[in-house]
Structures are given as structure tokens and as C-alpha cells.
Image (tube, rainbow, N blue to C red):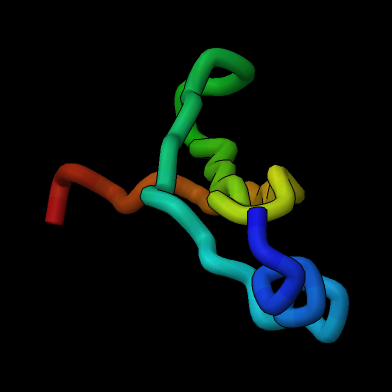
Amino acid sequence: MTTIGLILCRIGLHRWGRKRGYDEYSSNVIEWEQRCERCGKRKRWVEVKRDRRR
């Protein structure tokens, strides 16, 4: 990793990879995760699944 990449990550400008979703905990929520390609930091959040009946 280059020094400029470390500096960018340190000030909060990460290079987030693709979004990955997991729904193993409940049938109505998805746990999303993204990982920075430079420093490996993970970002996670939970969203409610959309209603399929609409």
C-alpha cells in the first residue's frame, strides 16, 4: 500500500469495495457489509427487507 493511500484512509477517504448482504439472523432484515480495499476497515449496517407483496 502506498503512503498516499494510508493518508487518504486516515482522513476518512476510504475506497469501499462492493456491498455484501447477509440475511441469516432474521427473515425480515439484511445485514450489509463493505470493506475498504486499502486499509481493510469494515462498515456494517442493517436494513429492513422490502415488502414483496407490493
